[in-house]
Length: 77
Image (cartoon, rainbow, N blue to C red; front, side, top):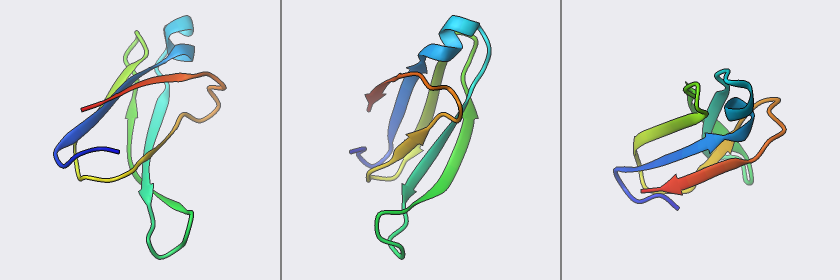
């Protein structure tokens, strides 16, 4: 759960291993469709696999890293 004005930061291990950037997509719950999430924002990892979404509204979010097949380490603030 993210507080108002908060952020989600993390690392994608596939990006660390390959040294290449990966897409990270941020989704938020769509209240009109139960258990569905709507796309909100997309970013790329840096060469070290790090990414951040900042200035977020309070709430729950889902992260998607297409085709990485790897874990994501996260921190919320």
